[in-house]
Image 1 (tube, one colour):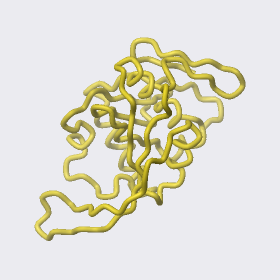
Image 2 (image 1 turned 180 degrees about the horizontal axis):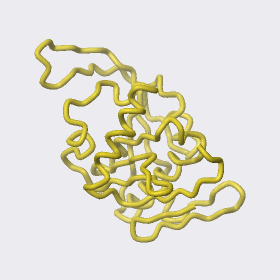
Image 3 (image 1 turned 90 degrees about the vertical axis):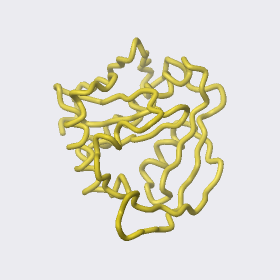
Length: 182
């Protein structure tokens, strides 16, 4: 991955879904997200209650994804080779701006073992509201598999981040009609 790639975060389109599934496969193989591989990844990326979804791309290729379901940040992931370039933060900034425009205070859940995601949320000022053990199972599986998973529950900082975000080095990122560039 080049150090100076140009990233664009934009609304996801239906024709992005194959690329999103391919990147999700890389993420699952690399870091185990999602916890269980979905039987229908396209449907998993388009859950009931989906408010909006975005992709991060560079050079026309998809490298990351984020979704908003009501007031919950969901389906956030970045290709292993694109990590460390601020792609996750850029996706979060667009989701946060959308939520602010809708008057929503965002929430999310993350496995406690996903330390890079936890670090991202805490760097962005998200507040940990609790940690709990949940029982996760594979929906529709013949053998009922249930596993205890520990998750942190987070809430966006009060006041939100708005549609404009100050980046390190003084760069200001602005959201305009679902497209953000850095």
